[in-house]
Image 1 (cartoon, rainbow, N blue to C red):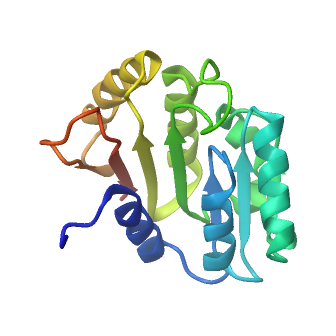
Image 2 (image 1 turned 45 degrees about the horizontal axis):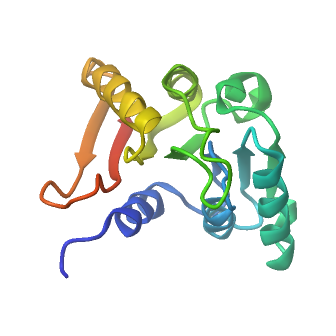
Length: 190
């Protein structure tokens, strides 16, 4: 297949945005795959800030980072991404080049614990305030469950009204697949 699948496309966008020494955010750590990916991209001189409300996600991410010898490049927060502004030190405000959200629920965990549109939108607004120009936020939207569909609709409504003079917004989605496949919304700060 020549068209990039959703997750490889998300990583491609992030690779274009992140360089060694950059500051980045994994807004939904989950099992730690994106946190680890970011830790490799930012290198020894960079910093990754990770957020998750579930202790299980924080522990899995800590373990994944330790197994790869990258724990020193990451600061993990056992709290929701709506606390980004208060949690990331002011010295890094204006320097964040990328952020990723995997919305929905933690794979292999309690499916009743899901991301919520109000906290996700709050986190996006906070990131846009403290990101560097040309910083990219990637939202991977899993909407194959009831709360995911609600979040999808509210997020799409929100991003469509963002000022085009302030951000570019892209939607990347396969439109002929069954079972509500995930899709991406990418927001680039101007």
